[in-house]
Length: 418
Ligand SMILES: O=C(O)C1=C[C@@H](OP(=O)(O)O)[C@@H](O)[C@H](O)C1
Ligand SMILES: C=C(OP(=O)(O)O)C(=O)O
Image 1 (cartoon, rainbow, N blue to C red):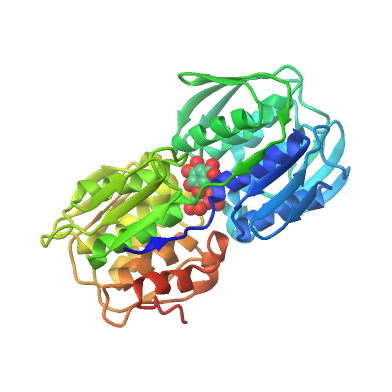
Image 2 (cartoon, rainbow, N blue to C red):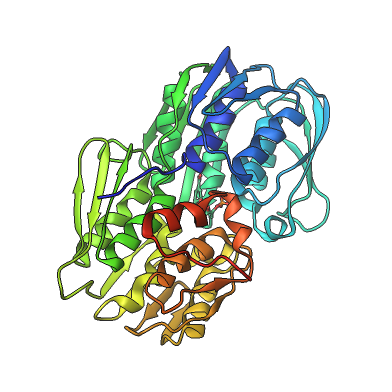
């Protein structure tokens, strides 16, 4: 019964870095994720003049409630959407300073207009350099008074998280009315973590009220990444094995742990205690087909799509339109790779339906998307000779050692070669 050690949560680490930077005092983050996204976030804070010390297993951040020490900085956000959306928002609260942000070509393509519009509605001087609503952009800080703002988070919950995180740094607090919301469980993570750093925030349906007053430093332990765990759980379900992940159980903050409920509905065995989760393969009949709404847990859509051919009936995943504006268009990427493996698949604006099949060996086109690589590594476990990847290294975004760690647990390498 392998107990798998999963690296820290990207989402929790990114929020913790924002909160620690804005807090009064020195914060210690225990077991943060060290990957391209979170290292990029930390480098961004360093460029802004925050004190960040990255030790192995713990990071220390010197909070600066008055804002960045640098009054002028150029920050490169790499591929990180949380970095690209949270860091400009952090600098908007500074009393003064000019901060320019840019991101990778992949991230430049991804939208952030609803967030930048809301920031402007709150009086922030924010200019897009090229395309409206995309990086690169410049924030000329002058503090944020606060007040009422309306936000459409139907494309990304990260817009709402950014505004919520900003709330305690405003002079009078924020009242945010949300007209639409995807990936809702991520807002639960945000609210819980804001409270852990001393903020006062309330939710009444679609209205969020955040009191002014800043944040207080703390020691914060980062839980393992539930989206990353999905590849190991899925692999247990399709290889006849069993996998236990420690540190992710009933008390977990991350909604993506809900992926195990999907596996349970398909026939896998799932046991969850307060702080661990075990998935065991289904009986001899294998996984059944399913129709499932993944609006709340859409980062695990590619995981399910990649194991879908091994189910005994069709797998239909619905309400995941926002997966088209992630690292790549994930509905198209999943469909194209499944077809390359010889599987029958159909897609619509916000859904994908996959027929049972017998995947044949193929090269997976990752589109530079870590989740496409990690998901199809699971498919490869039951493909004779495995699968190969055009860009195996794209896993660096959230799990640089993924291929090695996966091979260690499941024996067969996912052949991360070109
Ligand atoms: O807030 C976060 O940390 C995240 C929210 C989700 O994004 P969307 O809200 O854009 O779906 C998720 O896909 C992403 O990996 C991380
Ligand atoms: C969509 C993702 O990341 P982000 O939006 O934080 O870049 C992801 O990790 O699947």
